Image 1 (cartoon, rainbow, N blue to C red):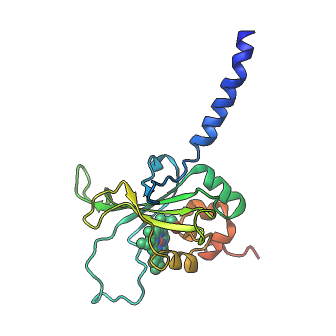
Image 2: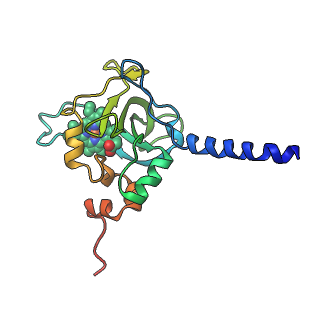
Length: 198
Ligand code: HEC
């Protein structure tokens, strides 16, 4: 009898913990600044891009000498499942972009490059109740290259506009992420990687 009485609450709380655990929500302090998301390396890895730049019209002469970086993109697994089914992210979704400096010629490595040092963490957050424009963008590194515990959102014109205009799905650059292309054919088409079967 005792077992029976305890079995249900234990089962229910385990299920709730699982649901909550698979979807870490964004959190904000009393001033409205966002807290840096933790544990994102355990989320779904959407993909890694290398050395991507967004500025058109730069020539070798006008380009600032800037070493290429890796961009690793992560999203909560429950948010990814929602995206796979609907092509949109749910409220509370966070896309974390970790920016990593390359390294070479260390340990046994004689050729090629590996991911060396995290030099940036940028986050896109969806919350259609909190934000009129649905998505806001944050950077959790200071200009001196130090990680920040909290960050204020960027103004719309600094980040949102380009994401909204050129992102293939729901303000995100899903066309560049293998795990997003795999689950949404329209996203794959946006990159012209899907050829018509006919
Ligand atoms: C001119 C266009 C442009 C602007 C402006 C821009 N981004 Fe992006 N962003 C991109 C592209 C392209 C990607 C694709 C992935 C990459 O860069 O590796 C991206 C990817 C991202 C991602 C990964 C998730 C996603 O939405 O695809 C985050 C987070 C992000 N940017 C944050 C920011 C922040 C913060 C700002 C403003 C400070 C910003 N971006 C401004 C073009 C832009």
